[in-house]
Image (cartoon, rainbow, N blue to C red; front, top):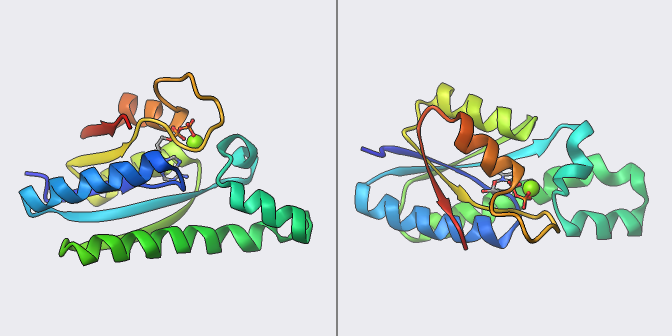
Length: 152
Ligand SMILES: Nc1ncnc2c1ncn2[C@@H]1O[C@H](COP(=O)(O)OP(=O)(O)O)[C@@H](O)[C@H]1O
Ligand SMILES: [Mg+2]
């Protein structure tokens, strides 16, 4: 049970907390963690609001730099998260994909034969009064496997 756990990560505190939950679950079930970040397709970039860091850099360097700089933030997120998991002695891989966030997560669940997803209830959106974000809502509704949603 729970041999392979998918952990979709954005740059939010919620996702970081869900990673801590995933580490504890993985220790109990001898699971392998797969950390996934989806670099949003261009048309949903603004809505996804991937990270405040990018906006700050965009201001410093001009809009043309965005597409070159986002992947660095994404790879940093995955590399740092992977290091943290590995330091706990849990087997870990990283996956970086580009496209529609929910669709890519759902596709990965099926292609990878995952039996559990652990993710944050919310992410980086500035709207604070929602119980679930659009990504967590979409994954819970459509996922073919169980989903553990960390609420804080
Ligand atoms: N680009 C992404 N790649 C992978 N996982 C993501 C991405 N964006 C959000 N998630 C996951 O979905 C959770 C909920 O985020 P989301 O639904 O986007 O909330 P919000 O609307 O507050 O941004 C996050 O904690 C994270 O686990
Ligand atoms: Mg979001």
